[in-house]
Length: 447
Image (cartoon, rainbow, N blue to C red; front, side):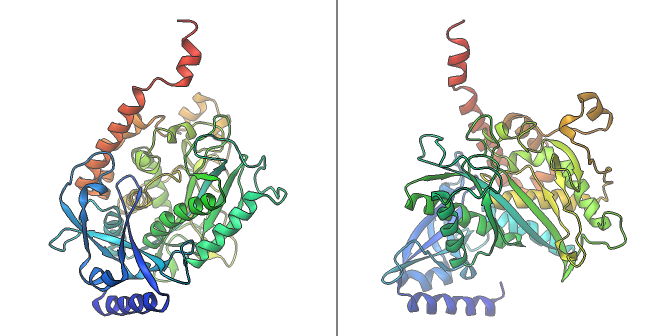
């Protein structure tokens, strides 16, 4: 942000805080695992915070694997200043700002996921591109955080009788819009008590901040109504899990770099190279886009979860879908990557998807033919003959692929890459040493 622009933004923040009688400002940032972190300052500290940042303990950025115990500085981004609608508005209001994490000397901290995304967006900008994304985050409402008891028995796009979930969705959309986040759709999803609210397409950095806000708002509104919202990828066996399909495109100025009116698929060479990059590197970025043990309970054939490395226009069983072109909607030409889930770290997920796509563009990867048939219904032999591979089947398998990936290491940078791998190995070890209910039920009475 240019100095003049930052000065103007800071003036706006100070003026708005005064007008709305803001007393507390929450400074938000994200750890390596995508968990939202926060500490509050009073309005008296706001000017100093905007100029110099506020010091805090850097170990909170590292997830499970504590590496940096040193002090860090959280520098608020004035463009992200918003009042929190669920806090008092009349007297002593509360606002929030996302922060960039710096070292005490003022240089960016390479372990900050927001910085990682900024670095990848600069790589795209150096090639002349702006990266736009539109994620669709699904989630469940349950009666509380200790069970998976549903609020309704509705299905995809059902107009169920007016119930708690309808009001919850409505209030969530209104709260998001109050915070400056545009919403396109909200509807009931396939599984009982499963819902989706789609945010309006925007640049990737704004969207990563919006995803963090969205997850908090969904949970906050649910809590206010005495229920629990979860973004856990697969909370209930036997029904669809929750995904985060990510629509993405590259623009050159005002022109969509993916649209070609003369191509039979209406796709430019860059779009095809980008798709090829995503397909080729999908297995090695999966530990980032689907980063929890539970993510792989969702990534199984059936249940609309994409596990096969193929692309198509109409087929929803493929990993990548290119929504069909509609005349007059050239700027809507985009690629939908369907494997990520809503419990990922959006800063890192957008980074590795972009890196995979740019790798395809820079190296001009050849895209395979689209697969319009249902890949689930093909025999194993047919999939092999058509060279349709699959995503990793467990977190451990995914981490091993990521560990060997030059593309992911470059996208995340050494610090985040090493810390992320370390975190995921800790999680896998904690998981594999557990004795589960499944094992007790299955084995105790017969062994």
